[in-house]
Length: 68
Image (cartoon, rainbow, N blue to C red; front, side, top):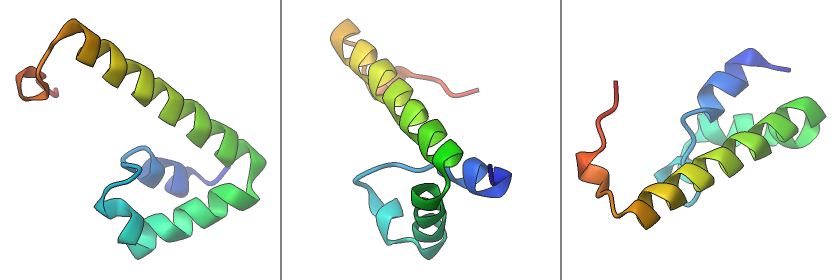
């Protein structure tokens, strides 16, 4: 798996402005060709969606979430 692409994709926001960034486009294209990277990206996005949903259900406003 390409670790540089993985690092970049760990910050990827689907549906956001990242989709227009050439670096993300290249990493996403690589993920389509690399089965391990594709599986990692799918798992990572699934996890992010699950956490976002739990925060939404709990009624925690995003502005109150601190990133360390």
